[in-house]
Image (cartoon, rainbow, N blue to C red; front, side, top):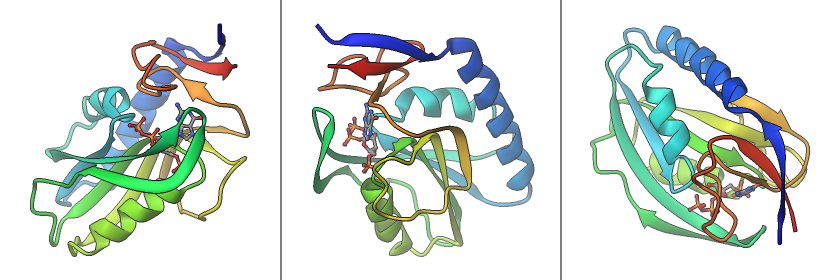
Length: 171
Ligand SMILES: O=P(O)(O)OC[C@H]1O[C@H](OP(=O)(O)OP(=O)(O)O)[C@H](O)[C@@H]1O
Ligand SMILES: Nc1nc2[nH]cnc2c(=O)[nH]1
């Protein structure tokens, strides 16, 4: 049985998400914000984050998948494109985790083709150990060096997304 080691509590997540939501609220005042969550992993973080952003904004979703177990296949499969018009608008991409950086790099490339006015990035977890693509993260809630993380939307083979806090998975 895999072991789940508590890493970040519900309370710590709540406080950090509130803080980041407040920063986004201030930074995007007067802009045309569209928050774009990356499925599936971001769905819990996205739902909490947008409720801490108190300026008017719209929400969209893109889908991308590349992991089997704890490893990236390196093949990013796009499962959903944005529905909203993003041209000339201020897009904030929301990820649960940036690890190798391959997924977010590919999503940024594809969103750029839609000619938004700006693209910024936000992640619940920015993990350094396996980074291959250098990506400027505008908003990161937690920085970690290593481990394979589950809970609060993050899965291992589609399990554990429902856990309310974040755990280090030991196989
Ligand atoms: O920086 P990277 O190494 O590319 O890893 C980050 C990506 O990995 C996870 O997605 P996954 O492919 O597991 O799909 P999921 O969101 O549906 O779980 C996560 O949600 C990120 O999108
Ligand atoms: N669940 C999960 N998905 C990932 N995708 C890339 N890194 C990770 C990780 O640490 N945990």
